[in-house]
Image (cartoon, rainbow, N blue to C red; front, side):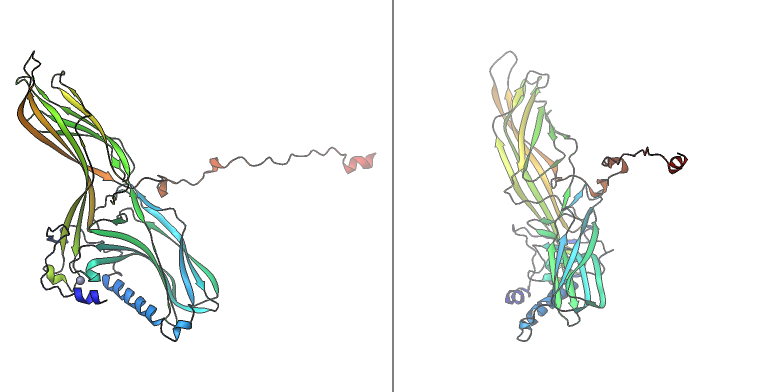
Length: 435
Ligand SMILES: [Zn+2]
């Protein structure tokens, strides 16, 4: 607590990011980062702050001399029954994922009267560059995405185990659980029960939300480098995964200029994968004046190199075709041991994207016709190319909830053999009488 008090008065606020570059103050409206207010009217930073203070007080009071010997009236526990939450497809198209489970209430050896029992699915966006360090409202924002009110009003609950089932279709446009160098997005299921004596039962569990974009066809990208005739064609996968490699096929054309008797020779090739993070830190109402009023935020950007490699050989040069070509294939990837995150879109103010940057150093050579004498002209160029790479979670089972077909009648297997129909060959009673 002393650290909180010490860090509150900041006389001259200068928004610096961790790499020493100042952040820029931006309008929140123009950046489309305001959370959708449709389902979120009930939640605010104030609510979450009150919530934490009350729970803190309750835990403090339970340690008082009288209550320390009183056992808890009960406990809460959440059991998730659905598979891991993976939203398949891009945010604009994804049909979401199903979350279902059971809230268990264990009542200790006597009956209790519950005033309320509710479960909330919440998202928490935390910035690591708050406008005022130590201010919880500037640092994180909690939004209630769905609430289940299982008990409202006084309700007696008997001794034993009670179950409350819940289910929710996690919207497909929710950003995935993220922890980047500038901020984080997390989801929780938070259960809270209040007895008529004011005793609070609580339980919270983190729920991981992942996004997976299924692999499509490889894409071909063409880059040209005027004023030379050089052009590069790269074949890249449509999506990449962290902790995995992917092949890159590159073809450099236009390397020979017949009129000048010159050609470009590839000397060095490097690639690197950059993780680009951007966050807009909003200020709370108390500290909004530090950045020029409400409705503004401070934008921070950060680029981190996740992997890089350099080659001086390994390609195939062919100067005999009409304009010559160089072909080069290499393997790139994000190592599993590097801390990184999947792509995240801009709906919460936190954006993470990945770029593959390829740099080629070419040197010009003079090679007259019918002569084996090759002379460097001294001219060299750096050909730099940048490609956006969709980085997503692996598909896992790879089936969206809506594609999981229930069994149809045709799918019902053959039943066990039925009893044979017995033919009775005994004589009828009438026949017996007639004898
Ligand atoms: Zn604040």
